[in-house]
Length: 132
Image (cartoon, rainbow, N blue to C red; front, side):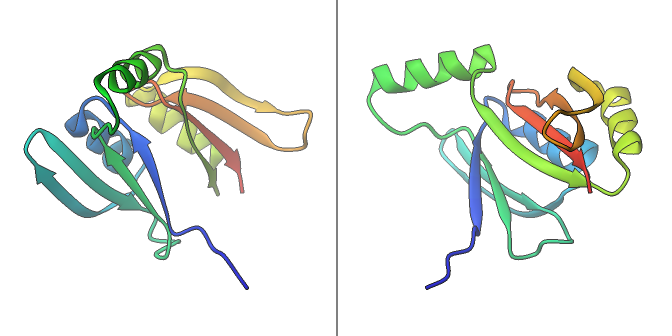
């Protein structure tokens, strides 16, 4: 039996800001944008990985207390986002920094063997990008 990742979800507070970050700053392609009432599910992904999708959503399920707790964690930047690989790490870093991303860590050789950097998306999710 084989399992492969197909879709992951990233909680965002402003879908338009998230779309601008993931599409325009990171360069992911827009695959779908679905709205229902006050909620949106925006699917993006890398053209190099057409089988893998990332859904950016402001939809929080659960009780009102759960919604408030998740919104608080999101506002604090306590929720992790995703990790990417780049064939041009320094170029990716420069592009994101110039695009206004909050820099958490500049490109650094890590003790676990990769060179990477970290930024936060407009919702505070941590995004790490490593050299391919």
